[in-house]
Image 1: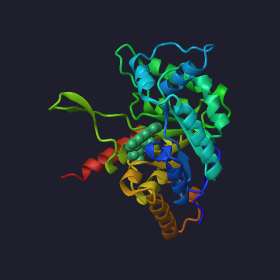
Image 2 (image 1 turned 60 degrees about the horizontal axis):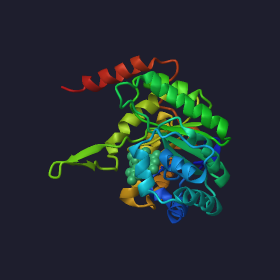
Image 3 (image 1 turned 120 degrees about the vertical axis):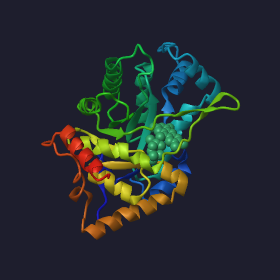
Image 4 (image 1 turned 30 degrees about the vertical axis):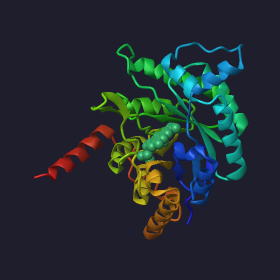
Length: 327
Ligand SMILES: Cc1cc2nc3c(=O)[nH]c(=O)nc-3n(C[C@H](O)[C@H](O)[C@H](O)COP(=O)(O)O)c2cc1C
């Protein structure tokens, strides 16, 4: 049975990818993930502020602007001076020890000088770059057009700067999701990770300070991703990697049926350990055997909305069927 697939033009043995997180910041973990059958690994992200900090420390020629304020000061105070050097040596080490693709990751939110620095990721040897585009309209003065422009500027500049495949990781909050995702997929990127999990805020009522909300996803968070993969997979021109709420082999199968090219897992690895990657792969193979499929292309996208169908009518019909069953 063949679970291999292509993602971002790279050959993967499995469509199940270890998503970007703390677990992928460590070479021993990366080796274990490959041994357990991961199709690829996406390294923990570096923040664009981290890159700006490194540029400022090492050059006077290309001094970036000072738009970052407190977020930059946080990085300057809390991140080791050699954090970027360490990141590049992790990429080099991973490329030496792993045979599966190693994907670098940058968490970005603005169109700034950090973009030219992306060539260093290529020099270090990563096979592709995932841009975690943490861009939301937090300010009342920010319009959807502004957000779109930032996306376009970042993607266009990065595409000119690097020759390796680029994937963007997007948030589930877009007013015009289908239009935005389709247009972004036409910009020469190779992949789109749907979706990033936005950071949640919580408040400690005793100390009246902010605290982090739980970091791990709940299994039922899968449904929002699945809905959009079903709707968009046939009209998007790049690969879709489904992320958020994937916990079981059955979830992996569902995302492939929805039309995803690959599936990323994070929370389930935190909960069950890195070896759980093997359980997911075994489960995928068992399902394929039970259904008589020899390769993934035989069933990928079988449940997706077809381009000839109107997604709005399709969704409305599902909605009616759903509520018609409720007495
Ligand atoms: C502890 C932790 C650290 C994470 N760090 C990153 C990161 O550095 N970059 C990134 O793009 N996503 C990061 N994520 C988000 C995950 O890649 C993923 O998008 C999210 O957890 C949803 O997938 P899941 O439901 O499989 O956990 C992190 C998630 C967790 C739980």
